[in-house]
Image 1 (cartoon, rainbow, N blue to C red):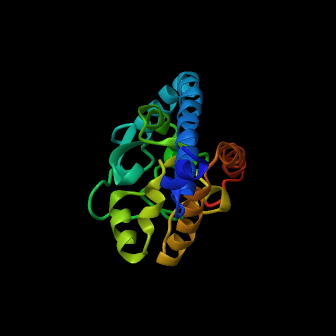
Image 2 (cartoon, rainbow, N blue to C red):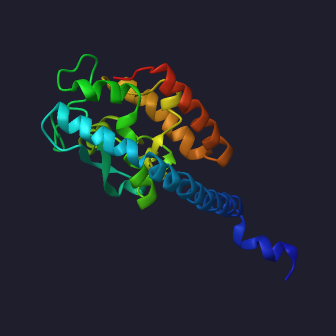
Length: 221
C-alpha cells in the first residue's frame, strides 16, 4: 500500500478529526486515573471532617446532613449530585430558586460552609463513581439546564465533557448564582472553551487557581 493509499480514508479533514479523537481519548483516560488517584485518598483523609460537618448540620437545623439533586453529566446523562446541606429546603423539582446574597434559606452553618466550599466535598464520591471529574464545567440543577437550554443556543455543548467540582468558569469569577441569561451566557463561553481545550496541564492550572478562589471567597454565598 502506498503512502497516498494509506491516508486515503482520512482525506477531507477526517484524518485531523481522528487524531483529535485519539488525543481526546488519551486525555480522558489520564484524567480518570488522576481523578481516582486524588479523590480516593482525599475522601479517606477528609472522612473525620465529614463526620464533624454532618453533626454540625444536623444540630443546626432539621433535615438530613446530605443533599441530593438531579444534575446532567456527560452527554446529558442524569445523576444525583451529593452536597452537604446548607439550606432549610431540599429543592429538586421543576422549579428551583438559585441561592443569592443574604438568602434566608441558608442556615448559619451552611453560610460559612458555602463560603469555604466545604459543601462541595461530598462530590468526591461523585468523582469516584465516575459521574463527575475533579475539573470540568459545574453541573447545574436539571430545572436550570432545561431553562437555559431553551434560552441559549448551544448550551448543551458544555455537556460534551464530564462536569467537575471546579472549572474554568469558576476560576474566572463565574461562581454562584446566574441571575440573568446574559450572565449564564458568559459562563457558558468559559465552559465551552474548556471542553474544546481540555488538557492535563490546564486541569492542574485550574486546581491551583481554585485554591486561590476558595481563599478569596469571591462570589461565595
